[in-house]
Length: 193
Figure 1 (cartoon, rainbow, N blue to C red):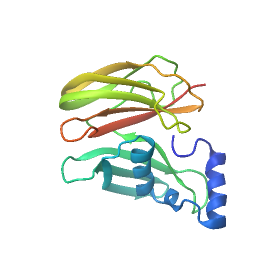
Figure 2: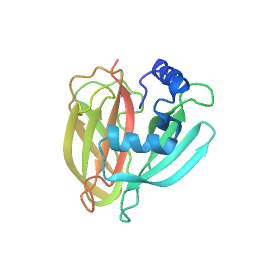
Figure 3: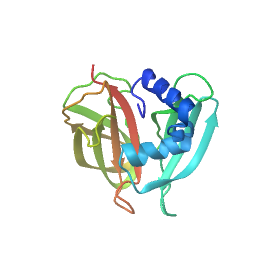
Figure 4: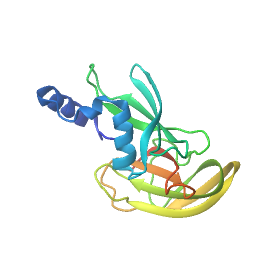
């Protein structure tokens, strides 16, 4: 899903890293999770690591708001992409508990408009859905904000998007507004063809 669109891109980074130490943060799952959250998704207030589990080529990194308020915003799932001890970390999704994005399914072929949905536990939530691609800073589509809440309740929201160039897109659902604009988020990867 991010930061490398293809294995060839990951291998090119490995060559650059071996030649001159280019962008060493790709070797750190915590820094990769924070770069994904703050840089790619644009969630600037989420800047603290709240949990860390690394087992071999698999990592789950909890990210949270910078201050003492609020809990874990998401558990970012990463895997090593490529071979060798310097294979970079790649974000492949989130592990979801009280806020999930299950529609469309991971890796699904999609087109605009796209129906999204999942489950949520919370009070007075407003869910925003964005469609992003690694080659663009701005979202390709944005839909805001469907009211939701309760205990393990389903939610659905349509989002239109345009201009996809990348084969893999990121769908991100977020909620917040109690103490920060984004307090929890969930992501999935979809394909454009």
